[in-house]
Image (cartoon, rainbow over all chains, first blue to last red; front, side, top):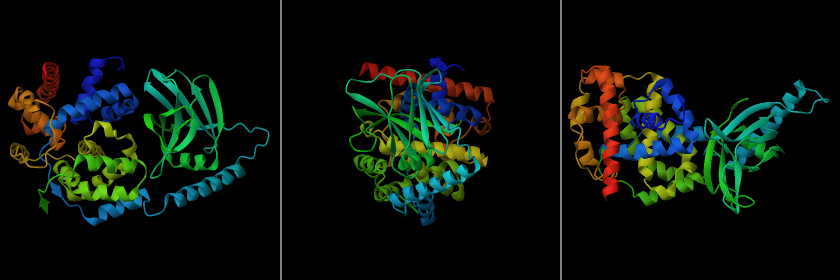
Length: 221
Length: 188
């Protein structure tokens, strides 16, 4: 299946939103949801089909459901302690890995995770590689995503149950290498995906993403 | 226990979601209290079994918390956004748990489901006219898929129709619905 076949894509988007796209086909289609074009198609279908939604009812769930959610998301603890705990865990892991991989002559870290920030499978804007134990990033610009004047693209780690943490601005040309600090490493260790936001020049003024443009899953390199 | 008091106001839900995006767990708790009875009822409609619906409800709120940042407040429809997440979670859970729910009573239940209660989501303009132009069978197939979360196979069994026919009714029904709704939009 080619992504440039609009008619086929729209049909898949319709059956995805309706719920009849199942199994492997559904999982496969979900990978395309990072594409803004596909996202628009799915959103349009969700809106069209909303008319099929029956009158809503209310049935109160048992209290144990909230308790389970709270514990899955670790909402009881403060975010600060979670980040600190992750930072300690990351440091310990780093030390353990260090013990087993004592190679003083080859400081170059290997890529352990990667993510492609793409419009569709044919148009990758940035390829991000996480090196070692979340210590460094390699950023490769593959296509240029339009950037309005006076704006910047910023990269974010999206730790589960925590606030997004900036991984710095994204370059618009070439290949770049970046060493991460402890907070960024901890955030990345708890993330299954990363995101790109549109910010004013120089980056987010608030420390949180202003307008998220893309999110992409991290996978093993 | 079932209640029919009105739905929480959209603007309030949208603000709560924005606070969730900023990792405000107190706002998340309020959002849960206001919306979980609605989403739980919706999940039960698809999954039937309470234990499975409770598990799905956990997944739904974990997803809402994680994706709150992707909710676009300017587009509104906060509750519709959450109901969609619930529907998709239910479908995922059916896949994971291999829940197949084919019962003879399903059609009767669907037929009863057009009462105008105070808790209905907003429909697209002229939706009722457009859906009314489809054949009864096609409407029934679309409803079984969307409302009950039934697969092509299950719909074929429930309506005693060949699988190929069900697939083509649904495909053609979706195309007609899109054409009709977009035609109405252009003439407004």
